[in-house]
Length: 291
Image (cartoon, rainbow, N blue to C red; front, side, top):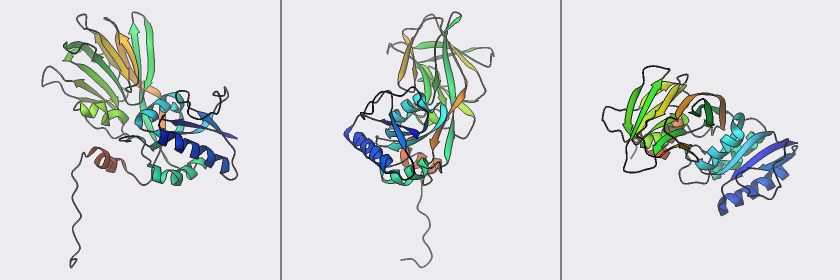
């Protein structure tokens, strides 16, 4: 018997597809599965999460937020994640419902390719103690809680002489998350196969402050200036931690990865065009003699 996690958003269409999935697993030939419900989305009455849970596949039914939540909860040990897009955009949850069964069958047999996505680790250091830490799948955002104030942040990379950012905040985005908040803030898009991450100021005070692509092995430290108003660290748009004056936020390469089941019918650059409209495409030239 093998464990499968189903993480579904709490909407009727997601719940309906979750029920279909459970029925499909029950009828799957030559295999027996134990369905485990995601800790944060109790959508199927399967009881509490077993202590011996060891999933070989995670299925997310929803949007990118559902996938990010499941990735942090279940995917940091490298368990493949099959993301089915029932959200608004679905850039990470790249499998559409119409192709779900087509990809689910080889996924259950372990016959699918996966994209390995590199992560960051983020820590908040207060004095000599680490008071918060987590893996970052998309981005870590340091931003102000008082709209009318600007932040003075001190940043250093690999222990070099620090410099100051005057901005509404700063984004530390993985290559995976470079197409999310980072892109909206004018940051660079980084192909997820590259060992790099992006540091992007949010609404900087000077036009010379620009997004910076760094090697994944770089170590970044951000310090909160004494004149800063209320400041928060937000991870993947889902976890928020209040910061204090003097806190140091350290970001470095994570020892964990997440693995997304790859949709063979979609390439990354095609997704940039189809989902985000980043490129202008032209129709191919017509063949000679074609009316």
